[in-house]
Length: 141
Image 1 (cartoon, rainbow, N blue to C red):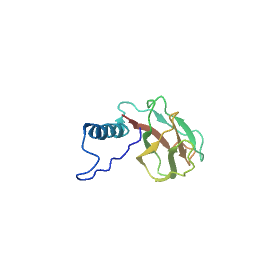
Image 2: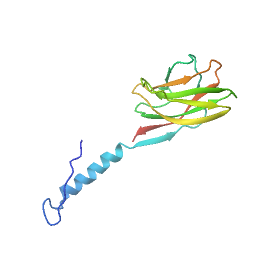
Image 3: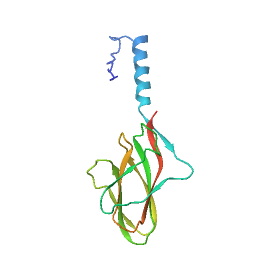
Image 4: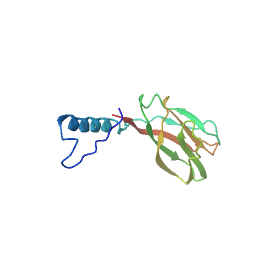
């Protein structure tokens, strides 16, 4: 329910009342319920390698994160000394969220997840030099 702000005036209307104070607490509870909670995944991570190169590829993570997930933490591991591009973005996005990767390393990034729990990943190399893993997710409380 949308919040209706109460304009308080010293010595005037509206008075401090149980109804007005309860409205404040109800609005607070509703706002807190919308704050996403992070859950870190532990144990063995499901890794994904690219099968189509130089194009954005869908990755269905519905078997990894629960219904209602709005963001995922993705770890990208580069296992080559070569210079390549890797990318992670929300499914259907037109943004070129590619990262310039040089040498052996890994990084994590946060990505929005669509209602079907699909994200898009990208690799500029045909040698499977990148691995992608979901490390955690955000979901409203």
